[in-house]
Amino acid sequence: MATSDAIPSRMPGKWTAYAGLVAALVALIWWRPGFALETAQFVVEGMVHVTPLVVPGVLLAAWITASGASDRVAS
Image (cartoon, rainbow, N blue to C red; front, side, top):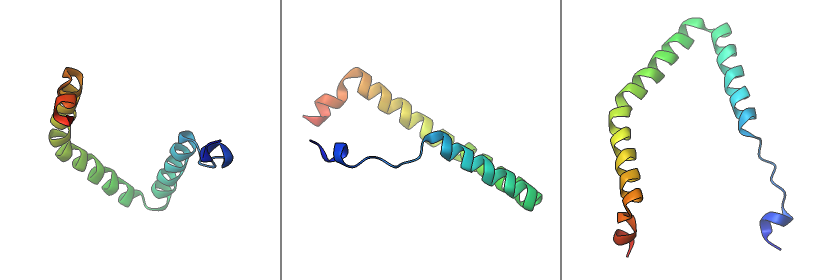
């Protein structure tokens, strides 16, 4: 018997996390609308700045994995 079988998982599902994020966003918009807009702009700008760095890395990693080169590097 594995330990994971003996101890049941009590982690909430992903929809619980999404609901919590939506509730926090609605509360922020209600409480401080200007701050909510600034926060949204900050998040979008951050994503725009990071995307050119992340996308090529993900594509390169996928290409290396798909071509089998990762097995050669590992050995």
